[in-house]
Image (cartoon, rainbow over all chains, first blue to last red; front, side, top):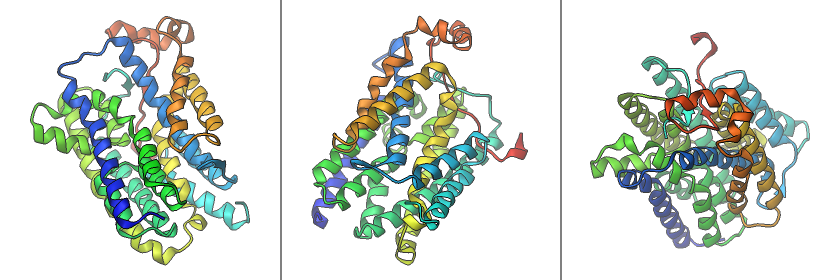
Amino acid sequence: MSSGAELVAATAVLGAGTFAFRVAGPILRSRVTLPARVERLVGVAVVVLLAALVATSALTDAHSFTGPARPAGVAVGALCAWRRAPFLVVVVAAAAATAALRLLGVS
Amino acid sequence: MRSIWRTRRVPTSGLARDIALVCAADTVVGASFGAIAIGLGLPSWLPMLLSVVVFAGAAQFLFIGLVAAGGSPVAAVAAGLLVNARHLPFGFAVGDVFGTGWLRRIAGSHLMVDETVAFTLAQHEPARRRKAYWLCGSGLFISWNAGVVLGTYGGRAVGDTDALGLDAAFPAVLLALLLPSLGTGPNRRAALAGVLVALAATPFLPAGLPVLLALAGVAAAGTGHSGRRSGGRSHVRHAHGSAGGSRVRRGRRSAGGSR
C-alpha cells in the first residue's frame, strides 16, 4: 500500500483539481454565455453522469460485479425515495436491507 | 441554467427542514465512509483529510477503494478527478450565487456538492438561491465531516462494515437525489444509455473512466427538435425562452405529513 506521504500528496492533488473544476464556472460565467442548446445538454450530461455513478457504485467493485445484496439494498432505498421518504429513511433502509440480506447469507 | 432543474416553490421553513434531513442522511453516509476506510486498513487520518480537502463523496469512495486494493495513488487521483469533472457544469449552473467577491467565490466553490447544487437549482429567486446554497453547503460540510469522524472512530468498534450494509448508503443517497430528474423521456433515455455504457466498460477500464464514458449516452437524449415528439411537457416550457427538450426536475424531500 502507498506510504503516508504519497497519500497526502495524492489528496492534495485531488483536492486542487476538484477545486479547479468547482471554481471555473463562477469565475468564467461573467465572461462566457453558454448557448441554450449547450445549457440543455449540460443538464442532461449532469443527469447521465450521476446515473452512471449510482449504477457503478451500486453494482460494481473496481472491475467486477458485486453480489446481489448491495444492489438489492439500493433498490429498497430507491423504493423509499420513490415513495417520497426523507433522505435519512432512504439511507437507513438501504443499509438495513443490505445488512439483512448479508445476514441471510447473500453476498 | 436555472431552467434545467424545476420544481414547485418551496417555503423557507420547508427548505430549512429539507436541508436538515439531507444533512442527517449525509452524516450517516459520511460515517459509512469513515468506517469503510478503517475497515479497508487505511490510516485513520486519511478519511478525515480527504473529507476536508476534497469534500466529494463519490471521489472519496473511489479513492479509498483503489488505494486499499493496492492501486497506485496516481490512478486513484485520476479516477477521482474524472468523477469530479461533473463539478464543472455545476459551477456554471450555480455560479451566480457568489457575486463578485473573491473570498465568497473561493469558499463557496469548495462547498459545491451534488445535493447543494440540486437544492440551489430548485430555487428561482436570487435571494433564495443564495440562502439555499450557503445553508446546504455549510450544513453539509459540517455534517459530512462530523459523520466521517464518527465513522472513523466508530469504525474500529464496528469492524465489518459490509455486515452493516454501509456500502449501500452512498449509492442510495445519490439515487434518491437523482430520481426526480429521471421523470422526463430524454433524461431517462440518456441515463439508461449512459448506465449501460458505464457498466459494459467497467471490467475493462480503470476506475472513474467508465463513468465519464457514460456521457456517450447524452446522444440518446435527442436534439431540441425531437423533444417535441417525446413529450408535450417539455415543449410547453419552451415558451419561457429557456432551453427546450429535457427537463431535470427536483422534487421535495420531506416527511409525508408536511404536504
